[in-house]
Image (cartoon, rainbow, N blue to C red):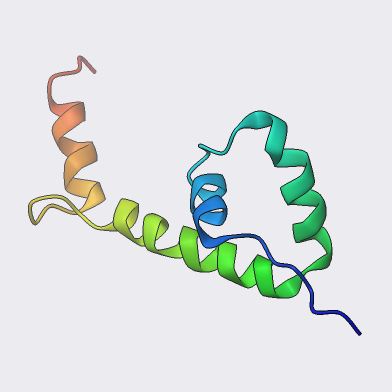
Amino acid sequence: MPDTVHIHEDDLELYSAGHLEPERVPALEAHLSGCQDCQDRVQQCIVPRLEAIRKPHHGEDLHSLSSHSQRGKPR
């Protein structure tokens, strides 16, 4: 049985960031639909980005950031 050819790590990074060339996306997604290994690798690319988004900036949590944006608004 031949070895499965997987998507290159650079392409997975570009895809997960939304920067893969649009004409290459359908083939990559077709491969992903049937390859658990590559699905797992894409998830490994995405999770750190999500965690970075969720981290508060400069010691503030999201609630305090929201409160700051509401202070200048009329009620």
